[in-house]
Amino acid sequence: MGIMAFMQSMGTNGFPLIAAFFIGLMTALSPCPLATNITAIAYASKKIGDGKKTLWTGFVYTLGRMFTYVLLASLIVYVGVNVQAISLFLQKYGERILGPLLIFIGLVMFNVIKLPSLKSGERMDKLKEKLSEKGYFGAFLLGVLFALAFCPFSAVLFFGMLIPLALKFSDGILIPSVFALATGLPVIIFAFILTFSVSKLGKVMNKVQTFEKYMRYIIALVFVIIGIYYTWRVWI
Amino acid sequence: MNKKYLYAGIGIVILLLLIFTIPKYFTGNVTASGTEISGDIAKIEVYHFHATRQCYTCKTVGNYSEETINTYFANELKSGKLVYAHVNVDLPENKELVDKYEAKGSSLLIGVYGKDGSFSKQEDTAVWYKIDNESDFMNYLKGVIEQKFAGN
Image (cartoon, rainbow over all chains, first blue to last red):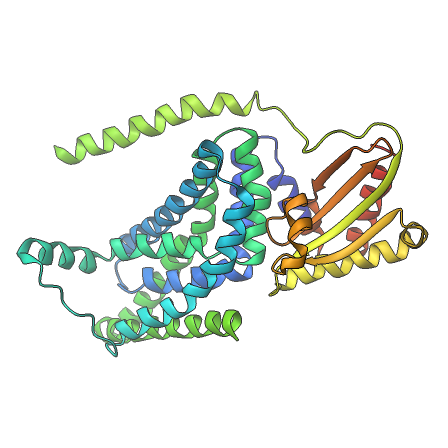
């Protein structure tokens, strides 16, 4: 049995959570989400040498994706929002914003663009500091935004396969949650492998600090390159 | 102390969700979209819907479908019993068709008209799993269309 035949039999499994999981895996590995997931892997791996933190960052990113997918599915299943309208809208605009946004984030990380510091009191500043330092808020936001960027094929998987499943069992929460977990799973796994091997290499060469410094620029570069890729694909 | 309550709260929410949702999975009813066609078939339409910008997989589904129809249903195509077309969902002139079929983007939709004037449509998502093997794809789709002509 080929891999696609296997994915099909699992993706149409009678137990909807198993089906949702495998439709999610298909999504994670299809070209467009793969590009956003690579960006997320880079983001999650920015603190090398701290495997636990990388795992958490990947997990929080997945929670961000979950937020979007559950919101969309719930709007469709419980509120009755038109699937066709929401699908066509997101395919039209979601991807268009993504490219320029990624380039922007990359340039901020390169310090080319400096964000104006908001004068909003000490408490606000502390909160901002805490969030950006921990990076979890950023990871969550990336998850939310990346999940919104539907490409033609990921839209087929979500709106054509997962949503009918959610509608059939009138479940707008668990089914999309399991789907989201599967779309984020590669990020968690690969980010962990990446940080583990880079920090091992760094230890061998006694250069963890140097590696970490360059890591930031490499990640910024990944953001810019993938941003250019999206912008080129969608706009040109 | 605070964290403990938070974790307990999250745990309870997840547990409640599972308790109330899982049983639904075993009673879910299978519903086909549109009315069931009984009796003779007047016409079948096969449409490959797509956006202006197509992904590789989307193009493949369109090409393989067209080839299947041209290879196995040339006579039906000529007589008008079968209609096949690529439909761009972004073009305003296709809006009526897109709305009729409720196309949600790239998709292969099959519409069946009964002689009694009934109409039913069905999205075929299985084709997406068959793009790695053209002959499998063609055999599968041929079978689906033949079944529709047989009134099943």
